[in-house]
Length: 181
Image (cartoon, rainbow, N blue to C red; front, side, top):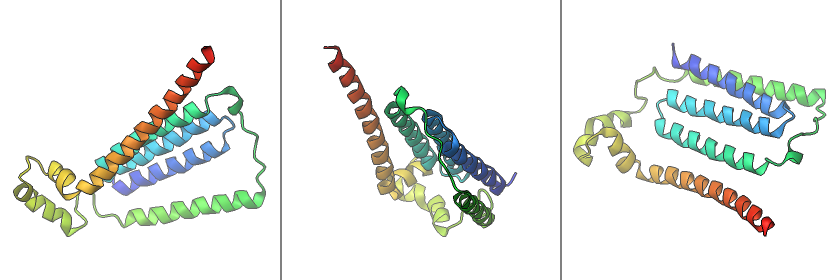
């Protein structure tokens, strides 16, 4: 099955998940729906042969989900007042989503055939990475040598997400311990 069909399916799934997250009354359920959208983004990265981005997206979604659930776990935050959308706002939102979907389908058609490098740089890495970097495999050479700053940025994002998650969990634990004294 062509890659663009999978990407169109994932895009439809993400749009549907976004609509569910906006329309559902329970905030925790809305947070889970947004997490499902992030999972679809991670899957799209995998389909587009970007496993490093897929892993970062997946881990970021997990940490964001933990942070949001911990922030809104109290019972009084669960129910959301129904929004009063006018017909004009609803129509404008629907038109925008249809336009995004149509543009994305057109953009997916422009993707190269699955497995074919799009740039001469990719072929250069395949041909010269083993000799120049003296690495046992090409993936390590690209991630740790050619794209070292990008990898450093990804690790920084992951570290920040982990640190934020632990900070929120620790603050909640300290409040519980302080209240018991």
